[in-house]
Length: 170
Image: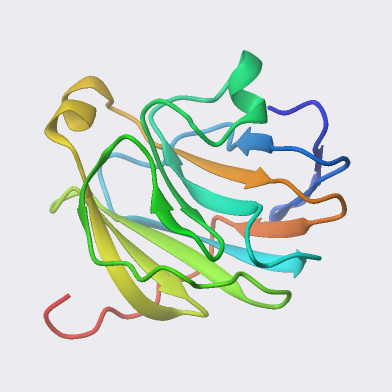
């Protein structure tokens, strides 16, 4: 956990950036591997939505110097306004340019059968992504990760949010 980020103590966790520079934090527990799961991030404050806020999944809990960079090994992150990034992406159809502004949400559903992620912006489906075979072979768990860059950025994370419906054919 990034020592510079403040984390709330409620069922819905909140995270706040306390200084300039990347502050990466992961959930304490991985997503379930036996059933689909969904979590949703609400942007409570984002002084600069053109970047500096990333949400995704990682095969481990970032530690050491990793908590100050979004160039994580074994991860897939959507970076506000910049799109999907990471070394574990096989394929995706997510658009670039989604700015995560105050009041908006980003949700991720892990489909354990298809071994893919479905992404939602403001509870509307925006696309899916698939992990590389190497990532799937080397990582048995997925930890939600959140990266904040701008002071006073704040998000809340709801691990109990109901997953939105997928459109037909998704």
